[in-house]
Structures are given as C-alpha cells and as structure tokens.
Image 1 (cartoon, one colour):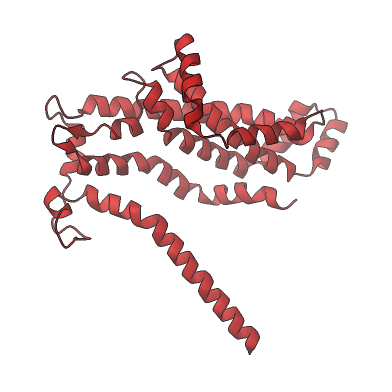
Image 2: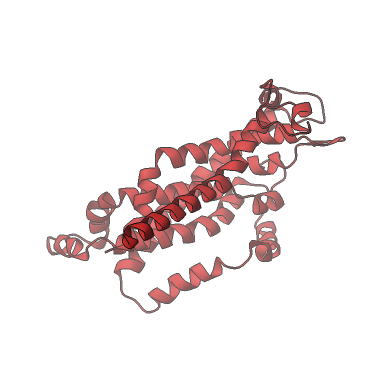
Length: 285
C-alpha cells in the first residue's frame, strides 16, 4: 500500500512539474499570437483581455503593404525574409557536411588529441558571444565580409558547426564499429564505409542536427545586428527595428514574430520523432 501511495505521489508531482514547464514555455508564445490578432486598444485595456473580442488581421496586412517612409514596407520585409532563408539553409548545409566528416573522424579514427579537440571546441562555446564581437568585426572588415551573406554564414557556422559535430559524434559512437570493420574487410575504404554503412543508419541523427543548425542560424540576432546593415539584414534584426516617432510598434512586432517563428516551429513539429531519436541515440550503445 505504501509502495502504491509513493508511486502515486511521485507520478502526481511529475505531472505537476510537466504542466508547469509546459505553461512556462508555451504561455509567452500564445500571448505573442494573441497580441498579433489584437488591436492596440484591446491590448492596453485594463483589466487585460486574454482573448480579443474583435480579432483582426490588420497587423499582418501592414507587414506586406507600404505605409509611408517611417514604416517597414513589403520589399524590405521580403528581402530580410529571403536573407534569413539563404543564410540559414547555407549554414545548415555546410555545417552538416563538414560536421559529419569531422564527427566521423573523431568517433572512429584514433589520433593524438582527438578527445581534447572535441572538449576544447565545446568549451569555447561557453565563451559569451559578446566577447568575440570586436575581434570578428575587425576580421570581417579586413576581409570585406561585412553586410554580406558569406560573412554571416561564416559567423553562424561558428555556432552551428560545434553543435553538429558534438551530436553526430555521439550518434556515430552508438553504431557498432563491427559493421564498418566487416565492410573494410570486403574492400571498403573509410569513405565507402561512411556513405554506405554509417550514414544510411544515421538518418534520425542527420535530420536532428540539420534542424538544430537551421534554427541556430535562423534565430541568431547579435552578430546579424552588428555585422549587417541593408544587404544581408535578417528577419530577427528587422523585427527589432519596427519603430516610429511614437515608439515601438508592438502589434507589428508580434505579427512579424509569429511569422518568423513558423519555420522552426513547423520543422520541430514535423520532424519531432527524428529529433528525439537523434538526441537519445548516443545515450545507450
């Protein structure tokens, strides 16, 4: 009886904790969606109205039509959206290709310093990004990469590539090496074993790291804000510039924020099964 009561209490506490975490995580995003469909009067009404009495699409419509010199027009919004797509997809592709080769070499090849290399690379990620702003700015100015897609892709790779290497290394380590040994006995090289044996078994891991690399680049704000001006300005930077002489346009920020969040949210929902398998595959060999 005591065992059953303890299980019931522990499970109840677990459910309560899960509910608290879900509410803590989802509530801000739900409020963002509600705000995007609200009018300014309803948003400032006291007491607060959680559900707008007259939902409107005006905030979304204003993003795609010109309203004068002080408003962000459709061309700038679409240009920033296009920049984000180009930079994020390029970063994801390059980080996946380079990360797969690097992770496979670290997981399978034995060379001096292979363990220290991965630890050093991940330790560098603990450094606050603001510390690297000035050195990177000087390097990019000398290389004439400021306000360019290539410059921002290189900077985003410094964020996404270590994550890809770390996750894929754990995934490759979970695949029995005997499969590759048997393939090499039959005449396969390391590259043949990688492409014919390891990668076909690493589908969930590849999908998960590609999604994480895309999201990391899509949501990056600090470097994009400092290193871009007009040509390579991304969507997160543009959203931060929704302002007029009367102040910030909160409703337009909410609408643009919802649109900017749709690609990562849809990717996470569609490929959640692969993401979970990719993250947990390296836990047990």
